[in-house]
Image 1 (cartoon, rainbow, N blue to C red):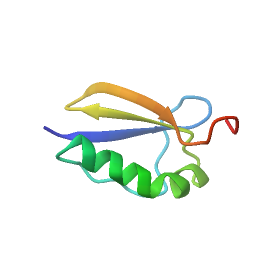
Image 2: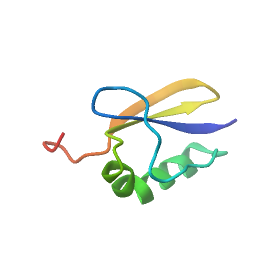
Image 3: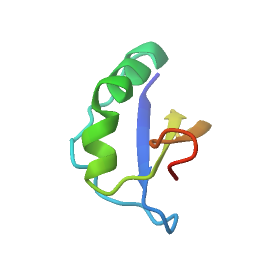
Image 4: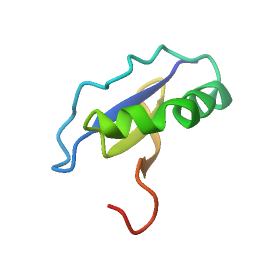
Length: 69
């Protein structure tokens, strides 16, 4: 299994992340990575991330605290 993130700007278009992610072997590793790097990713232009497992969308979330979107 491969877990990957997709990064989107405020307009919903895919953007290059400010921090280059790896391909993760577990969901927990992918989520730990996003928890560590969400601030520089958001500062670099990513507003939303979507987690995929082997190309299947699992969920998406904002990189901004509630009320700051």
